[in-house]
Length: 139
Image 1 (tube, rainbow, N blue to C red):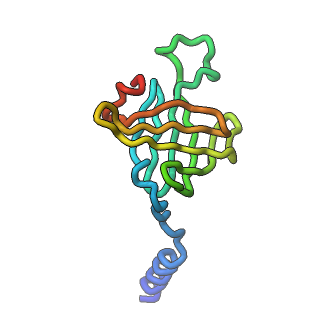
Image 2 (cartoon, rainbow, N blue to C red):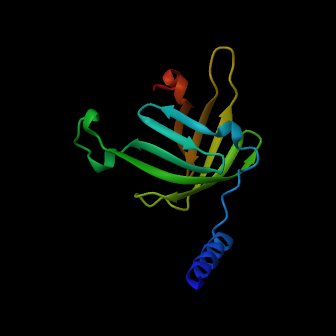
């Protein structure tokens, strides 16, 4: 019986001291989802955890485009002001961790879907559309 009580105590402690779940970032929901550009995607979840997947030309500069490997960059969005979300790169194989990220959202119109444009360290990364309607952004 002591063994069962010990296991219950360990399980209770694990629940008590577990890392808290990430809370949703206020105002981030319009930015959420998968956004597509030409051979690139940005995925943003409600907690701000995000990933940019792209063709990694640096990894194989002599490859044909159809043979290019893909890479990813992780970032987290931590605040929203109006139609702009801001955050920071958290992981990247090319040393951009810690650089600021901004994502700007445009509203949908009768002729075009909503889009995001975004920057890493102040450099423009392009225009992205909802993955379900990526033809507007070259997808």
